Image 1 (cartoon, rainbow, N blue to C red):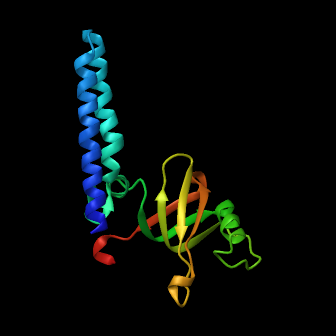
Image 2 (image 1 turned 90 degrees about the vertical axis):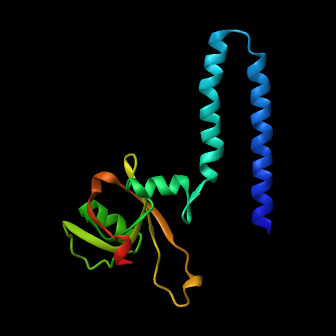
Image 3 (image 1 turned 90 degrees about the horizontal axis):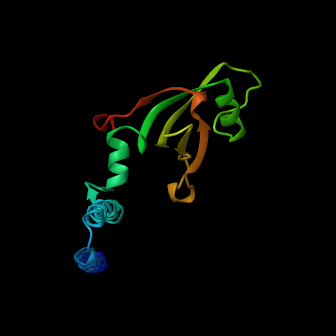
Length: 156
């Protein structure tokens, strides 16, 4: 019931904002001002409305990130170079056996974002009971990640 009330408030807010924008548009005198105004409206609508749209069980931004594999997807294995191994050892995600390996891997990790110069990753530790553990979010520079294998929806 609370979700329905929130959605109705959001719809009412959107309608009010639309009426205000329409009123401002009617007051703009010059043609260039109207053109500029017509360019600003879609940008504002996209910034306000798109984050609220849900496709399936996730909001639109996460859906788009997952669809194009920019982020928000799970991997079976993540392969990193020697510097990446040092980062993972420092975070205690892989055991430090004293050997300097040229590569190492991390299983069952979620790539939250791979845009830019760094990967934003999430590792959920194995705990019993699972609600006692919170996921560990961390960053590894993208030049230290060699490859990853993706879990397809049919493999879950």
